[in-house]
Length: 219
Image 1 (cartoon, rainbow, N blue to C red):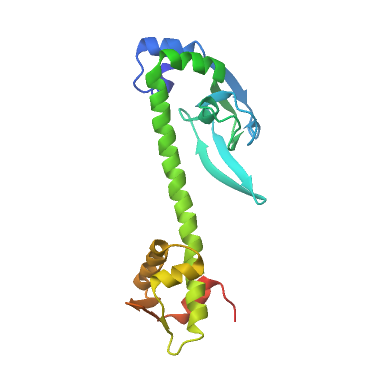
Image 2: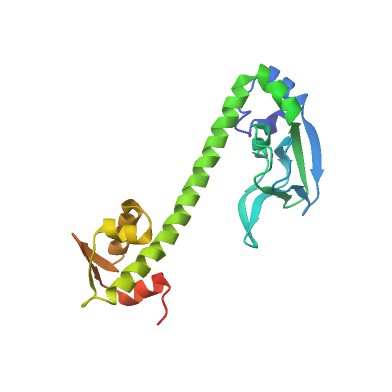
């Protein structure tokens, strides 16, 4: 068991005495392939470490399944339940027959009172996961704003001659109900791809078909 725990980053620097302490509160849970470990919005009262097998962390939104990660040996999940988040924020399901170590919230709370370094390591790992989530959200927002900017440029071009639009980035952002920074990023990306050219308060469309395609406008 100790060799497995060495693979878990929050346990990697544990001394032998610390391993003995944590091992006393561990329980084994066996999960068959396809079985749910817990569902989103359930009350959480345990933290899990994958001893063997694979666990899928996912959620369902708008009738679609979004898979966050597939966890294998030495990885852990469900830690938010031990940090004051009452309900599960995602679902967990066995991708194959799996064995898990589990720690109940009650045992966990007793443990961290005597081992404060453990909670710090857990928080560091949580911060890393939040950073990844922020990056994914930023990517989705950018993808959305890309299409909106393209559509606004395409619609404005219909009113102008020679595909030239006279508008400031600030005004373009106001039209879209956003800020200038993401609009500037989109315009720079379009310019790099040779779709438009920009100078001061002017946007010149170079590739009309590409703008129309990105915007989703059908004619």
